[in-house]
Image 1 (cartoon, rainbow, N blue to C red):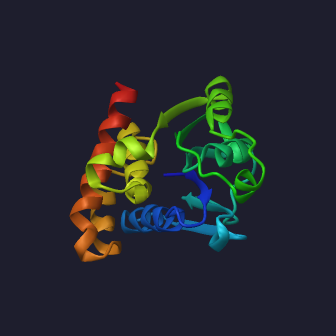
Image 2: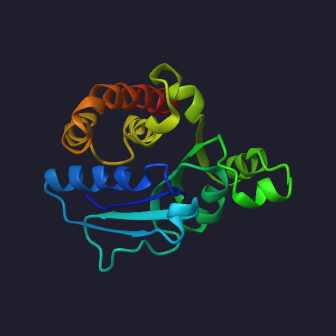
Length: 196
């Protein structure tokens, strides 16, 4: 299997854990995996990008125009990383923006809607809301696992739900495992409905 998966968002959204789950599940399935994070000012809400390359790859960073899947935890970050997506690739994006510090200093009116509209014009796109999908679980912090479920439900990760669930059980603290599994399965349902 050869898959290039890019995950982007801002610091604190759980993008790195999501990339580690994908990479570990792919390795457990017997694939060669390369991964890398570009985290910059992540601790201050800055951009975070994770590259996961499954199969044949000569470098850990995904070249422009090569990503099969772009998992975007924030609309502006999805647009910023869109050049990495291949022509028939798919973007799975959170419609709920994380407003940058500059928004609180100068009210620009950023709410993510222009970014979502742009993505819908430019590529195959599944738009989901972290607030909505995670409402039953009491926190949008479960979105990093829910978005993995959406991707798994589409079949575009090349990994089964069982492989990813097993990795969630291994990587998530025990007291949060069941809630994370429920968030993942809620995401799977969205992905399956999109592909139906």
